[in-house]
Structures are given as structure tokens and as C-alpha cells.
Image (cartoon, rainbow, N blue to C red; front, side):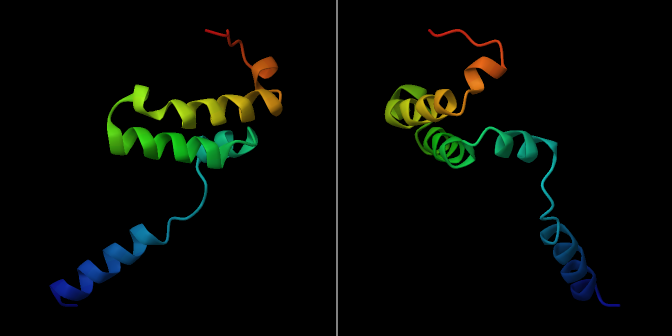
Length: 77
């Protein structure tokens, strides 16, 4: 097997790992996975939580709507 074939096989193995891990399962169970992804993406792009207030509020509303604030020991700030 050539080096190129080995690299292609290694890359394919990494790409085929689409099974949700424990973190994914936990986030999906909240009912707010999409909102969490948008908030995370905002922070990744802007590197400042203050610039993501709208995304944070949407996530917070979803969190409360699904009763997650009762499920975990969270305090309103």
C-alpha cells in the first residue's frame, strides 16, 4: 500500500466517526442542541460572549421552556 493510500484510509476512518458521544447525547437531551450550536458558533466567530447576547437569550429561553433549569442546579444571574 502506498503512502497516499494509507493517508486516504486514515482520513476515511476519522470521517466515519459520526456516532454521537456522551457530550452530544447530553446536549441533544436538553432539546436545545440547535440553540447551543448557534451560541457556540457565535462565540467561536467573535471571541466575545458580550457580542452574542441575542444567541444567549434564545438559548436561555429554550433551556427554560424545556424545564432544564429545574433539572440542574442553576441560578438566574
